[in-house]
Amino acid sequence: MADPATVQRDRSTGATSGPRSALRARDLTFDYPPSRRGTSVWDRWRGRGRSTDTAARPAVLQDVDLEVAKGEFVALVGPSGCGKTTLLHLFAGLLEHAPGTVAVNDHAPRMGSADTSYMFARDALLPWRDALHNVMLGLESEDLPRARLRERALDALRSVELEHLAESHPNQLSQGQRQRVALARTMAPSREILLMDEPFAALDAQTKLRLQHELLQFWESERPEERSTVLFVTHDLQEALLLADRVIVMHPHPGRIAYDHVVDVPRPRHTRLEEILFDDDFRDLHHQLFDELKEGER
Ligand SMILES: Nc1ncnc2c1ncn2[C@@H]1O[C@H](COP(=O)(O)OP(=O)(O)OP(=O)(O)O)[C@@H](O)[C@H]1O
Image (tube, rainbow, N blue to C red; front, side, top):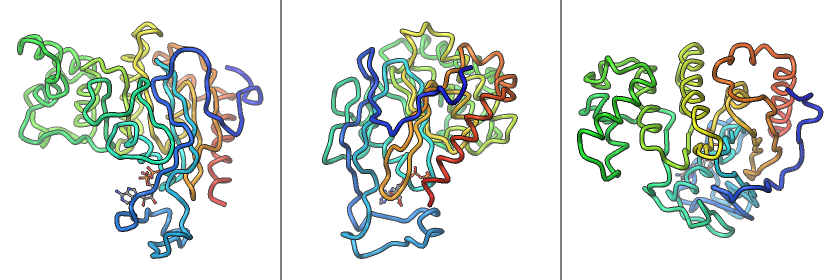
């Protein structure tokens, strides 16, 4: 691993050279309509409650420039309320934006696009479907015979070691198992782009490490040029550093990109996650990120 001092650390322009970008935001500024604008826990803690004075309020996102190359794994970290989920929603086509550019594979984002999978912090499984049929849901947009869909869904369940619970319903599964089913559903359809919003946040440390391993194993088993592009939101700095090629630090009020780090840990990583965690350089970079997050709260 490179000395963290040599790791790229700049007020990010977000621009990368190389392959065509999968995700691109350029000069992006976004605000919710005043009536819909809420306040996060962070806002309340800082005494920035809901205000009727819209002019005095910073935008949710301001002048965001971010480029994610095809096949790159990028983690977004930042304090609660800095706009991480909003940025993911813009890439998923769940929100309309203006002004600036938001592009997915060089096109305007489209809700429900076959290019993109979205995984939420909580599993969001359908309670009336068993695990297998929840995973098949992710595949139904693919024009395949039912037997083939079933086979693909079972493969995905096998990769998260839950094949034996294929016929269990969500209420018969633990939180960790539900999240593994959700991970299988996200991985099954071989989408080009995975947008993941704190997918492991609700899990205990051991289960989280196991799912990080499963996600990385799935992603690293593809050849680099065939890997999905991942934009992964997390509050867990260790998770961001373990998984990602780059970690982007956002600051709030207005939401913006403050730092952009390359994580120079060789791949594959999934076979040695615990070893990486105890690496001195890894810990140094962790501290550096921690300081940068604190800086945003001043
Ligand atoms: N649907 C909405 N309508 C109005 N305001 C919203 C909406 N969703 C989020 N906001 C506001 O936009 C800001 C950014 O929220 P967002 O959820 O993107 O932040 P975040 O960085 O993902 O936070 P967290 O880490 O807590 O999930 C917050 O101030 C929040 O109150």
